[in-house]
Image (tube, rainbow, N blue to C red; front, side, top):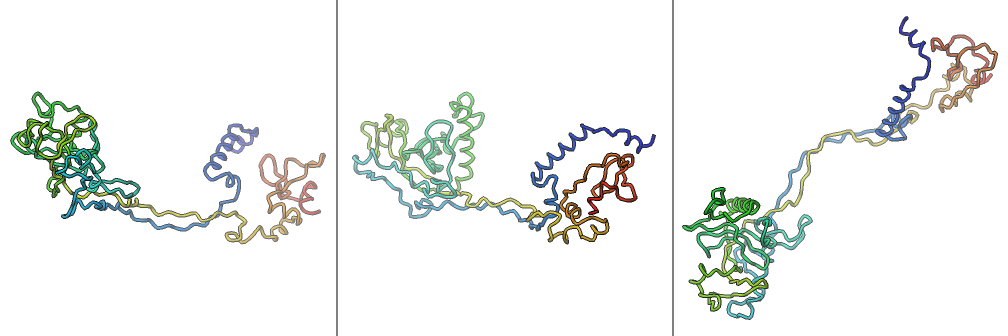
Length: 354
């Protein structure tokens, strides 16, 4: 049995095939839209090519120095504090606005004017723009930041014979100088050390800030706390004994991303408009009437053909005609699926206007 004969044998509907066709139709609707599936809309389209656009790198700029801290004539605000007037010590030198820019820059306010560090995992957080600050009040060079209230907070400990102790795994061992730090605090100290190394060649500016009184280090300077003569002192709301000291803050300008730039954009074809088959801009018009004359169609049948609404009357009983008719009124041989040549059957006369 030939392949064609096998095809003829299976004339019953295939539900499985129908389901696949239905599924394909649904996928087309999802991809191209409801109006495009089973329609000639969008068969023709008008496009234009959009050239590729080169990548633009981000733009970084220095945070504008609104306090003058990076300049040569910087004057620190004292908040009314006077070193010769004890009545001003409780409220003086607590202003930290000299460290940050309060203007909105790229959607963010209070950006640090100078290079600073993130908040530590524990303890007092840096003031806005807390900077990287050094102190010689203890052994070697202590390194830390300015916290809220203009208070100095040590992160890196000064060496006994000078310099600054580097936080290493050995320094966390028995007798190590950083042995009391938690894992998070130690990681913060390591990051702080790295920032300090990349900043310490920058010029420093002297500032006044508060720190806790330490009798071991401070007695030589001003004596006992009760009779302190080394300058302004105060007790804060947590009962801590604070004295005013001089520190050096690195004034390396801090930068921010003023423009994020843009990534590389590939060239592409931009869809401007979709058209149907009958649109005169893309097809010279509907099916010419001469074709209707050639096929012997009546004006009504021709119009139905163009509109896609051709319907055929039922086959007259006893007509002797087998099978069905195509939209042109020709009989379709049910065995071959090919139109039968010869005169039009009576059932098709309506299409021919007879």
